[in-house]
Image 1 (cartoon, rainbow, N blue to C red):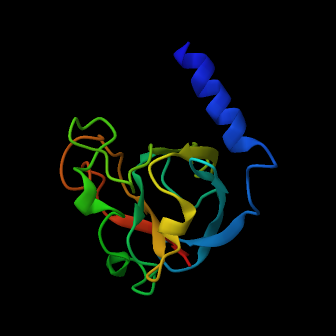
Image 2 (cartoon, rainbow, N blue to C red):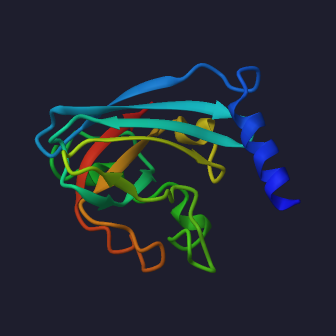
Length: 166
């Protein structure tokens, strides 16, 4: 029964009538140059994301992926001006944390051997209007995998890529 409900929610979230037009954003790497693209589409119960990274743009392996609270990628290579995770006051970090997750928590991004990635993800933890509030938000890619439990960022390390969402 649970699978049937989940499948129905996913179909509803992906149906053309339910989704609005996608918003597109550029993902900047450590040197501030474009390394990929992000599109966000509002769904009835969250946000559908499509993310694509060019070959040789990232180290292969898992990388933490989070929405941060401010649409500011101006401090190239650091990306600290993007602030904390979106909704960090609403729970503890981590998709596997019994006291979490925060609305900005996302699954890890897996980058292939050639340094590229292409993924479509859905999150029901946040809505598009929450990402596009007065401060906007940022999608941050971290250097290491997120363990989805430890505080404050799951051991994901440095911020290595940023997309400003306005």
